[in-house]
Length: 363
Image (cartoon, rainbow, N blue to C red):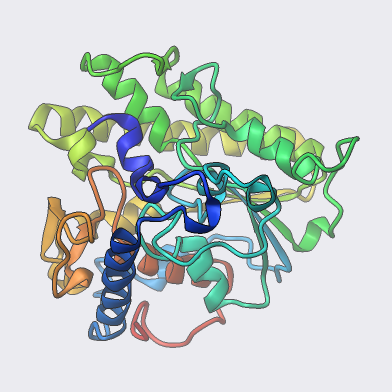
């Protein structure tokens, strides 16, 4: 699949020059019906009881768990809730940012449901979340580029209040209760792998290595630190070797698994180096995405997933009766159920007192 197709699935709904009538009604009804059915099916999925040797609360230890008031999220389509989608709207008044209200799912979300950050905010409404993530983003467009924003572009939106302020500003909130979240690197590795396999089509390009992209993450944390942030959270990359986009053959899967492992190792190493360099009250929490998602993608029976790589349950694929049994939305993006589980783990990672009982027992 072309790099952009998975990122732009929901943008196929944009139809006419008139924003107010920009959706084909039959398609909109199809997506709405499928989404309602999917959400209903998720709500009726049985409660999970995950064995400790698969994933447990012990795997969610090590975060900075001080109270949080504000979360600022930066990333790509794994986190985006409507930012890129809004730029496709033709009516300037509709496209302006910030956007206090996103259109309902599936519009603008890669999983065709709520993005994980929206789910997390629903679970923990006391958090004030600002989401700057934009679909298709890479860490640095000078290294990996597919014609979308990069993290510096997203941070620029933060510092200028979406371009409304003439002079850039730093963090205005209390650094002790403000958290900068970075979930980036999926598109970086995808572009690197596409180039390696002779699948990269212009104008997209890939200039750097996985180590360069991990180093880029360090540089973005340094910039956010210079803007006044002191609390950071980095998501490990998930097991992309189980995706159809990067693991469709044993050779591709092995290569991708190695790339993901190297990225995660370098990023952790660079994070430790930053803390040593700063020597202040800064913290960098690293969310165990790989540990969490790998058993899901392996169809561990504890999670009730039954359909992995290449099997999808969306309006585009024709829908299905049990969407909670699918691990992927398309060839690059995990399913809504996977992101729901991740959001729950994310909240418990930062707030151990959020729920009592075994991990996911309330889902």
